[in-house]
Image 1 (tube, one colour):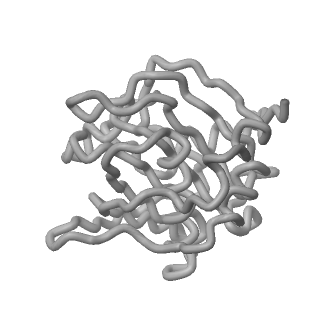
Image 2 (cartoon, one colour):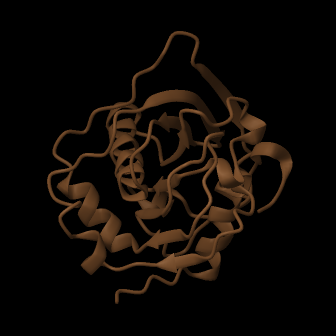
Length: 211
């Protein structure tokens, strides 16, 4: 099995970016290509999705984008593909230095403070050029995980956290042949947050807690 072991520095900076996620109560399971590249892998571009909220994080001469999107049903792998597709589409349109896409359920929380922990069904961080994120030495282009079970009736996810090796996430992203964005309903909120200095934890914490 292809095992992905993130470096300590990568874990720290992603902790800064993903700090809002909170504890999910799920164990992280590392999964390799033999399971990712089966029949459900081929010919799938993820799911239709709806943009819930976008946060622009300005950090000196760089820009990070964090998108919250929602999907209706589907399995964990399809949610992750959705996040990969939207992350690449966002980069094509905006050319930020880092894109994070968080996939929620359509019945999940609508306020940002609660878009964390069990509300998250999949999460992708895309750093097209890791040299543009000097907080991390040896940063991966993709960091991705998903929860292996569907959301419950309140839009929360309970299950194992499946962590996808960066190289396998890249292969999945490369296989997506229709990179369409989420629909953006009228009234979707976009906010801007200023990060500080070169701190690896400069990205604002969602919900105010550390997971």
